[in-house]
Amino acid sequence: MSVQPLRLEEIMAESDSQEALVRSILNILLESPYFYKKDDPSRFLALQRNKRAFAAFFEKFYGWELLMDAHCARLYKPKWYNERITAANRDMFNLTRRDDCIAFALLLEFFEQELQNQAASTDDAEPLRFRYGTLLEFEARRFRELFRDRMEKYNDETVRRILRELMPSMLRYRFLERVPPPPAENVRDEDTIFECLPALWHYQSTQLAVPVKEETNDGTPA
Image: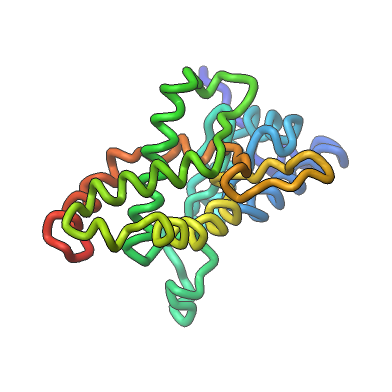
């Protein structure tokens, strides 16, 4: 006979500390797009142990899906109910400009290349890091390879501007994290170090390559 998993209400009823723990995890899941294990290892472990109870709670009351792996948890909301809030005004990761979408796809391609170059994996104790100037050089080269008939348009300064507009979203939605430089040390933009966060593992550049390829072939957004 299979044992039925505890409901979230039953876990909360066990003790005041359990109630506080569950409430804190619920709040953490709603406070940012991703909850990383490194954010709070003990609460992440508690969520992992009771994943089915949390998933059932969000499915029953909100119709949301709890997605979780060994390093990261997030909530997926398939439907928006307030039709008065337009897509442009929703607080969600949603790139709309063509160059931003391509730059994000190339960031994923760069991430996968760096994983190979640095022989990195999800099991590594230290996350993958890279120098901003290395990303800038990679993106500039790939933009010009994709748009050979418009190479002069995608000069270094243009690609720098595209990345400058993309990076705030990468930080806000927790794909990347800027590594603080040593105190009292002046660091150029190109020498800024960024850390890759687990959300990048949830995307694949190959899946984004099709619309990018279609766009570059006919010159219109996919």
